[in-house]
Image (cartoon, rainbow, N blue to C red; front, side, top):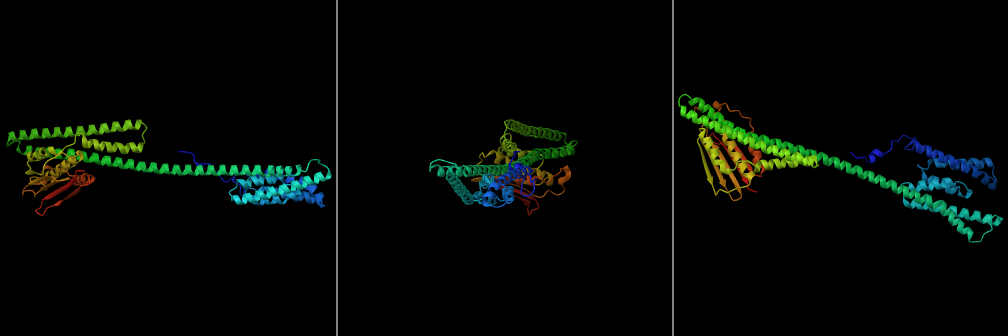
Length: 436
């Protein structure tokens, strides 16, 4: 986490309008010094004005103490300093007041107007004072000295605090702008991190779903055929030993095929996991690595070791060997398609035949595959199971995820999937998958 402007905002621990106690102490000290200065300068002012010295001192104390409110009312402080300039008092208050005014958030025209008034007032007072000194003979210089000294003194008392205050105010506003920008960037980074985590979680969920679907497709069909053959083996073991031997050989072959497919799938997953670890070590962002790894694993599963439509005849033959009356017809000119398309089409037919074994054992089944202009269509339709047969005789469990998995596979490639019972009492599964 970065340190932003929110961490720099001071807690309001001072009295009244001060944000900090040390700010209040500084202003109180400046006000005390200014009041003391004005009180001392009030003595000659009272003598020149012909008023009691105590009145001049009290006036100076009150005028100088106005500097206490410089942060809250800087305009008032500058106006008071301008007002007491003819009395030749309040130099410190004028300097500090102009600095505070220039550093504030007030419009520039107000700052310029008050600074000009202070400059003009100081210029007039200095000019009159020097003229009086020269008239009394205290100064014996040329006529050029009076305007030069007046302008120099007024600029020296006015320009430096104004310029310094403008610089400090601009720097303060720049720092606040940078802190606000840092806060905004931090919020954006947090939002991006949350979205990246959501995408990574979505990718992980998709990967888990894909793995579960692959495991279901690989295991369910082979194991279903093995169970069917095992049931047939149990039924004919004593009556027809030769057929029992053939069924036992088929069960062994199917078990080995299932293990081979499982090993291939696990090998793909392990290679995908090693690639994810290598990318993580190379300091790639965690969420991007998760999403990229999920996509890479999905592509790898589709390209490496996946079934294709050329193996469809063998798939149908295995179901026929298990006792299913199944017919395969191919329309159009067979051609090779993208690996994902062929694998999805194969899995749809495989899962449909598995469902026939589970729910309509012995039913006549027809498998149709059509190569069209820019798509592949497939349909698996079975009739009602023959009388006296029972789909549950083999005791095949069903999780109810087969049709859902088929629909997910097809729709993920932009295809259309439809399934449902037929009027004859059977069941039909149809899918159309675009080639690109």
